[in-house]
Length: 244
Image (tube, rainbow, N blue to C red; front, side, top):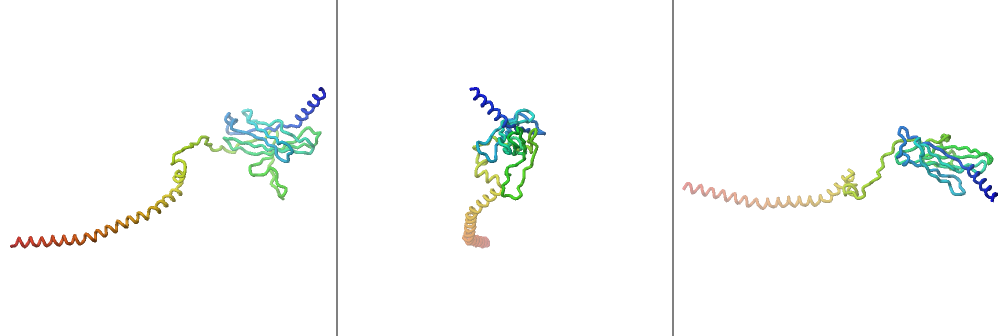
């Protein structure tokens, strides 16, 4: 029993000795770190590279009002002349942070060496952590300070997020009709299409009305002339009667 306990103690000591701590600090100046900033800011550490077992994954938050955060029990290289890699991802609902990705490299020179060297490299989304060996002149990542901590700072204030959206808006606020009304080009195209559809019928009606008016005028003209002639004859007869 004592031998088993001793072996377990030795294994636990070895496990502890083969783990590191990665520390960081969030700098939001000129803004202050508030409770909202702590809640809406997250840091995630992922193990990358050539892995044989389950990768290390951990998440953490800021633990004080100075913006400090850390990852404990990060696996170190177990063999001499070996390296482990980790990627730190920073995200916030209120701010855009830089660098949003940091590649950590932990090196151990020999198995008997109880110290390791930690290096950090700034990376961005869209750029590979490790350059392809087929590239003749690969682009290298910019190294940043890792001791005593890596610094994550503010890019600029992110635009306001819309957390509540109206699901059943009116026809003039959402849907196909709203899309047409909110775009001057679509509205002009819709008006043109409607005019093209109804213009022929309007023109036909206007032409019919003009033809009917013209025919009515032609038919009424002889009657009007006849009435005028009759009125003139009647006037002459009245004048003759008056003279006699």
